[in-house]
Length: 363
Image (cartoon, rainbow, N blue to C red; front, side, top):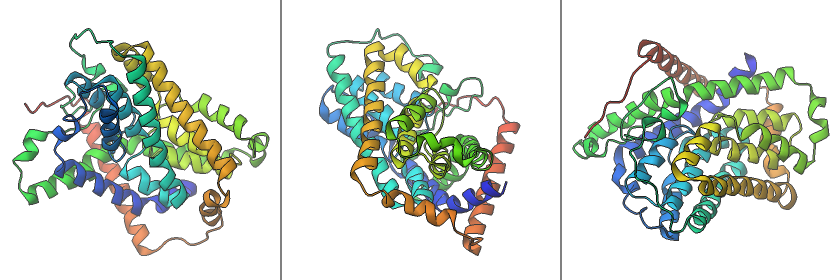
């Protein structure tokens, strides 16, 4: 519990700021902008999809129906793949949270790697699927159908989605948009990723307390072995971009290399069994292979760059300072921690009060 409290105390101010920025983006940027430029199967649509996806705070399962709705509205396969790669790997909330625990170099390199990987993956998908069309059958909810709805299903992970009520937002006044931004940031987003944030914190605390320091000795300074281990664990597992941060920190403190930690941060959120199955079913085997190949290639190459070409202390100084820090935090950090805990408790209460809340479409 002390480890969980320490981690959340470090993250809470930055996490709340990230939620706020995400809410402002949701309220003030019309959703139609995310579909207008993605139709043609060329590099420009892939570029726009990556640019749209990097700052969006959608998690690994939330991005699936959103991406499939882009496809249904005419986005090219390459643009959809680019969006699927860039969006779950990072976001304004996870970038700020990464800075809070892992330092500025990790916070800067994470969105850069996501952006480059998305460009590569989207271009590769366009190339291998050139001339291939979908059968045009309607999408089911688990495949992203009716993705403009606000879904909070408990039965299937891939049925989660975020609301993009573009038509409704256009009629709001400035102050109504501010209220919508706060509602989305501190209620809806906390409900969507709060569970996985807590899971990540608990796993990180268990690793820190229960795993002996000698356990990862065989992986220490062994980039390739570390990366193989991380890939084997992270690709099928569901973990969100923010929830992966404390796990990466805990593994680095146990001896994993910074490059391997980045592989976890990039491959974990972008690939899981839910996204793999949906992509295979709706976009085809070639798209899935190109999608996974680009994620693995981008994560591994960026990890190699960190471990072999960049100064190690760039990526370890923040952890060393955190490990030896004896301060209990300022009144501001404790206030942020209390607020974040209250928001998480509210999300938990709402989930129990409305366990089977379904979509409410806004035509």
